Image (cartoon, rainbow, N blue to C red; front, side):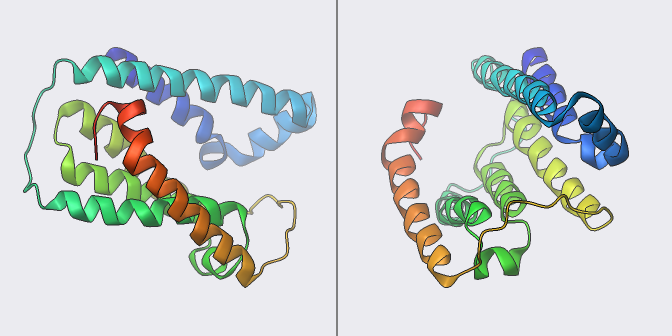
Length: 188
């Protein structure tokens, strides 16, 4: 569990700099440059992510069960995951989905984490998915109180929504039928 927690701390510390101290982040980018900042950020985030994966895998070998919910909730998770994939693509494809939701990536993380808490009740699951859920909620709230950095403008269109929907459906199918069991070791 120590490796999982260390990974979560590194990953969320990196991803929470703007939540905690946006002016410091901006000063650092000006001081060392955008590319070096992104490089340091990426190395830390990837290190945290790798530790999360390793730590979660190790923690799953000796599960501590906290709760067991009805197996029928599995179907809610399966349905929710379709929306997660669509929202992930909508993050990068401006359209009505993105305009309506505002921050599709954060909503996708919240849905992913909450739906996985419905079907996974071990200590490692609660630590992993609960951490992501809490972080996404805190980040979304903080975004309401800070100026957003500009992103490269891509014209918003309904066509982008169609692409997000199609790509989301394809990735959902690939992940549910093949990739989840290959990466996670559990068939959804």
